[in-house]
Structure formats: C-alpha cells, structure tokens
Amino acid sequence: MIRFDNVAKRYPTGREGLSGVNLHLEAGEMAFLTGHSGAGKSTLLKLIGLLERATRGQVWVNERNLNKLRQRDVPYHRREVGMIFQDHRLLHDRTVFDNVAMPLVVAGMGHAEITRRVRAALDKVSLLNKEKSLPVSLSGGEQQRVGIARALVSKPPVLLADEPTGNLDPELSREIMELFLQFNQVGVTTLIATHDVDLVRSLGKRVINLREGLVESDTGAIN
Amino acid sequence: MARREAKTPKFQRNRNPLTWLMRHAQNAVAALGRLTRNPLSTSMTAAVIGIAIALPSGLHLLIDNVRTLSGSWEGASSISLFLDQKLSDQQAEQIRHTISLRKDVAEATLITKQGAMEEFRRLSGFGEALDLLDRNPLPAVVLVVPGAAYSSAEATGLLARQLESYREIEIAQVDLQWVRRLDAITRTLERGVGVLAALLAAAVLLIIGNTIRLEIQNRHAEIEIVKLVGGTDAFIRRPFLYEGFWYGLIGAGIAIVLVLTALYLMQGPVERLAGLYESRFDLTLLTSGTFAGILFGSPLLGLAGAWLAVGRHLKKIVPE
Image (tube, rainbow over all chains, first blue to last red):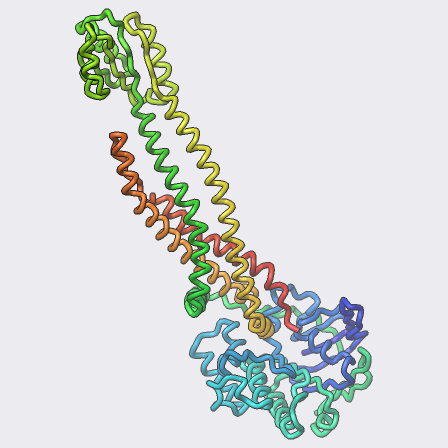
C-alpha cells in the first residue's frame, strides 16, 4: 500500500528531511513512526500526502508512483489519504458537521449522502450530539476526534496522523489511539507519527524509528 | 518487496453533467449570499465599478447621439444654386426642371427672387430697410437635394461642381464644411472615449482583482484545508470567480441606472437646445448595443479580474 524506495527529501533551505528511506507497509497494516523531532517523521508523512515531493527515490501509494503523479491529480490522490494533524486544522467558523463534511463536499457528493456519512463518522468518534457545535466549544480531545472523523468520513484506504496526541493527557491519548486501532481493524492502512514511545509499546504494533532522516530500527510487521 | 509494475489505477472523477451544473448553481447562489452578507463593502465596490463603467458608456452614448445628428445633416445636405440675376422667373423654373431631371438629383425646389426677398424680410428683421431698395438684389435660388445614392460629401461636392458649369448658375454652394468638422471632432472624441474606456476597464479589472485577493486572504485557512482534503483547483477557484462575476453584474446594473439618470436629466436642456435650431432632436436612450455591452462586458471583466487574482494568489497557498 505504501512503499518508499531509497527516498530522500532535501528542502530548498538545504535541510535534509529524509536521506534514503526504504519502507513498505502492506494494505491494512498499522505502524507507528517514532523518533526525535527533526528525525524526519513529518517529512515522511508529507511525502505520502503529497504535501511535499521527494527529491530522490520513489514513493508508491496505492499502486501509484507519486513521482509520476501530475499536479492536477494531486487532489484526487489526497482523497485517498486521510490526514490528521496535531493542531487539528479545523475551521473555527464552521460547525462540527460542516468541518467533517468538507472532504465529501469537495468530492461533489449529494446532500443526503453527505448527511448520512457525516453522522456515521461522528457516531464512530462519539460526537454525534455535537454536530451543531463550533469547534472552539469543544475540548482538545473532542477537537481531535472531529479531525479524525473528517479524515475518515470519505473512507480513504490510507490514514496518516502526525502527532495526533501531542497536546493530550495520557488518558485522552490512549482513547484516541484506541480509535485508530478500531479503524485499522476495518482495513485502513494507518501510519501514525508520535513521540509517545511508552504508549506505542503498550499497543503492540509495528514501530519504525527514524533518526536523522534514516530508518534506525523497524520491528517489522506484527500481527 | 517484489516490484509490481501493475497498471496504475485511474482516479475516479465525477463527470456527471447534472452534478456539475448543480455545483455551479450552488456556487453562484452561495457567492451572491456572501456578498449580501457584507452589504456596505459590496455596494461600495460595486458602485466604484458602476461609475467606472458608466463614465465611458455615457460619453460613448453622447457622442453616438451627436454623430447620428451630424450624420442626418450630412445625409440631408442640399446644394444651393444661386442663379444669374438676369434670369426671369420662367427661365429659372426651366432651369429647375432641367436639374430635377438629372438622375443624381432627388429634388429641386425653386425660390424665386420674390420668394427669397420675402424670406429674407421675415427672418432678417431688415424689412423697412429693404423697402428703401428700388430693386430686388437677391438672386433666385434652386435648392437641390441629391439622390440617396449621391448624398455622400464627396458625391455632393462633385454634383455641385457639375451644376456650377451651367451657364445660368452663378454659384453652387455646398455648406458641408462645418458638418465635416463636427464629424472629425466627434471621431477624435470617440477615440478619446475608447482610450478612457480601456483605462477604466483596466481599473475595474484591478478593483475586482484586489477585492478577490483580499477575499482569498480572508479565507486562507479554509483554502488550505480544502486543498488538504482533496479539493481541486477548479473547486477552490469557482466561488471566487462567481464573486467576481456578481461584482461585475451588480456594477453593470449601477452603471445602467447612472447612464439612464444622466440621460433623463439632459433630456430637457437638449430639447430646448434643439428647439433653438428649429430642429427636433431626441436623445436616443440606451441603444441595445450599449446596453448589451455593459450587461455582458462588466460581468466578463469581473470574471477576468477574479481569474487573474485567483491565478496569482491561489498557487501561493500550499498546505503544510
């Protein structure tokens, strides 16, 4: 589902985000990406979501070589990759419902179908009763769950999360991770960057540790 | 890790024309809704556009009117043939008849010496002074209206020269010089209005471009997220293009109202002026051409301005 062949990313500033990463995630696999800040976790995720393009090597997602993907196909690629961020990236002048509906609106889905799917997604993150609220009225954990609902509402095959529990206390972090485990069980290929090593170990999933733009250790697929 | 060079799966694109149409309709309505939520700033921007469009349109219309006027004068130009003093009324009538038979002459009217005298007496106010003269100093005149095919300035001039070669005709006078000058002046003005229109069109383009640029800045966060969740450039562009379109259309409405008001205000004085020249002259209200020009041109300008702004500024918004 996701494959990196000797991928390097050098930013225009000269900083090297990745310096030759080889990685392979099977469809339906779940893995955590760990490492110090600056080790390249975010860069790796950005390459998958095509927020950045590799300067060397090849990135494959969902059978497609991203290097060869034309710019005008990038939006369609992103519809297949749900992305979750530490800072949630919600629109604060829109209701929870409207925030979650965005990927579907963008894809041109009909009104009835949107309503049905958004409700289902909000139900899965236990926020159905908050659909008319504005994000500011929600707690940090709830906002992150809105972000997760938005990433999953269009049922993408790939889910990426960059420090999704960065601002949350351990208990809430655990709750969020449980959510990811649930979604992974229905077949979503999931890659989560986090520095919360203790939490990751307790979940017993594959852990890929990055260090200075290279894969330092990889537990390999664990099932 | 065997490399699979499998066929790259195609992305699904929504190509249902009905959905596409629906989305456009929704976008159009939503854009109008956004504009009406800020009535003050919207009406101010639209008013600026309206004025910028009304100015050249109004001037164009005015010049158009003057041109039709001078055109009708030129078309109805006549040649005055001053006959030899020695000719009798009967001889003069013969000459008139000969001339009227020419194929390039539509009409020839005789004003006898006596008739000329009476007209002069009536119009000049020298009635009593004229009584002192012992004989009529005025010549008989034949007024010649050229045929429709010979009414151009050139053909009329040629006709006048030919008629002048008649022995009985002293002078053939075509008084077209001032009509031609007026024509030349209106042509110059017209060019000036064209330049003005181009400049103001550029101004409208910039105004709308700048308005849309601000709008893009205001909605920066939204655009970024739409890009993150897979919104195409067309999807992001569309609401802004519709906003530009609406600005242009509202501006066009304002421009038409302004031009009509100005014409209405001028109607009275123009009628009085025309009355002084013993002619009837109505200001043509908006001709359908000008009307259509404003109604289509302005939204088109709005669209173009928005397109320029969107093209320049949307690329700069890159999600991180």
